[in-house]
Length: 402
Image 1 (cartoon, helix red, strand yellow):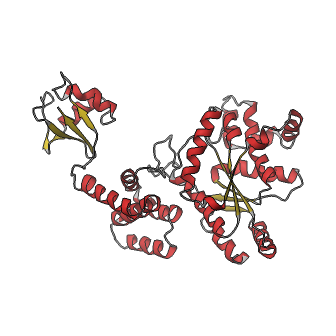
Image 2 (image 1 turned 180 degrees about the horizontal axis):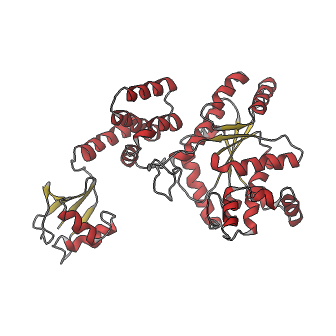
Image 3 (image 1 turned 180 degrees about the vertical axis):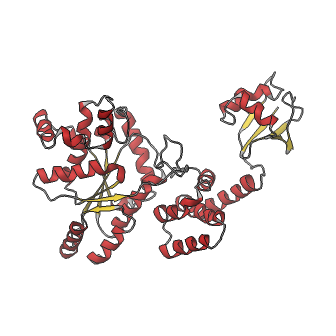
């Protein structure tokens, strides 16, 4: 094991807040002295099956803790997922079925192990202990906090002030999540800043049970591709870790220039000296696009390897920079009676190439559609070639076959 001081420095890097730093240092010192790894808790909500780069900010810190020799316990909230987590919502989140939770959890783990070490990870489902609680135990659990304390949580407070219904069962979610910390005797819990209330509730419940309180480590939230809101699939501003290489590369290139350094810092293994050098180069006039290409290469390489990254880079350069048609693209087969351009609109909509017929007509009139590398201006075009390549806008291609 590294010394407690060395470990503390590594753990603190990138963290927004640690409650408390003195407590963490004491635990690390004791851990080194006793040669006993600390138990690190990280909870996952299986409400959606995809892990995006925003999730990896905390996961990368988990990996650092693994590399330092500590025990990581990933808790899949299968029981709490069936209750419905109201986190950050203006209304209650829809509860999931057992089948949905199991499917999402299986996909979760496959993606998570692209970041953390599976051989050093213990995976637990909180139904293991929460399903066994009887009603008396649930009442005793509820007695450890108050309604006033629950209403300190931002989303509950807002909904209460706006007279938006709050189900009584929703108050149990933070308590159940806190009970997870008691069950595994967590020394440290990691979470994003949006999980502050739940993580601190774990500390409070451990104290009520006569246990030493877990240290809370909060990691920053990663802004999505819009540069404003936190990365979220529901907002469409995300990059999933299992995106195909070409899509991943392209999405990273959509990261706002102002966030290039933040992405390098939070979601890559590039050392800080190199990152600081790139930041200085941008300040001195280097084109941010050049550095963003390095970011796209780094992230794509991390999840797909060198060869796939190189192919994704070449694809991006050909298709999105030089406007060349890719080798692979969606295909549409012309059926009887589908000889005209406009007759293809339903199939173009089906393949998400256009949103509507009116949008397609507008793009044609604006010169935004090309047929076989020629600008298309005739909405009444009749296909005569056996095979045609249609380019819609700057990035969408489709092969039309008779």
